[in-house]
Image 1 (cartoon, rainbow, N blue to C red):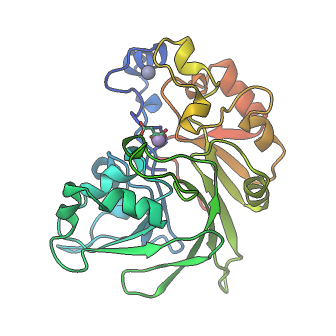
Image 2 (image 1 turned 90 degrees about the vertical axis):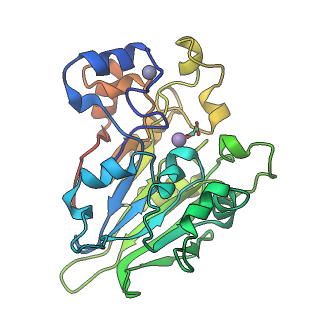
Length: 305
Ligand code: MLT
Ligand code: MN
Ligand code: ZN
């Protein structure tokens, strides 16, 4: 886990909410979180990023596996985008140092980032600087190594209730491809069995299809943005409810925690907003999460399935 926070990070630069104040003053830097991104690998050698956060440069530096091994090199073979929100795509512009990029995304997300965006020209310095690989629902797509060989990882996009990024609201008609979940599979080898990761870091509701994918997976990452629907309103920090932002709340009756509680795999919340009380392990909400056998992801978390 390179970054586990929602947009804005934790603490957020312009936020003096009780959580952000505590994160700044508590001394335990372990509370701090950068914006959501996860690195995955089948062989521990070549990597794929799920989302490209605005903090991508520091995130790459934070994990040795992502460091170059030659004067011009990156072990990052590709980047998979789960939606076009700024916290998931801005990092692409930071990877402008003339390196070929392989980006996996739906058409809606590709268009939203690359069309009518003058800054995208920084990723068009030479032909082939960016190769887009088209993701579509239900179609299993192999993640390819820089050499073109299969990595042993595949992603299958799953439909999630989402919405267009804030900067595209009202600009283009919304499609059903604005946000996706991912069923990531590591194919079986002679030494290992198949393992699956259900990656759903943003969703407005949990559909039966999503639930079935999560239930079948060895590990689930789920949207942990808000604990409650009216979190921003109650703190006087905003006028939007969780549902207006296409983030299903974690807590309460019918909340995501209740739905995850009975699932068999390892389950973690990610994309956690700085207002969410479960960010602090000594909160009642964090205890509720633990008691359900679910984890709150943190930056620097590493594990093997
Ligand atoms: C979200 O997760 O809802 C977005 O990242 C919000 C935003 O772009 O500000
Ligand atoms: Mn976000
Ligand atoms: Zn805050």
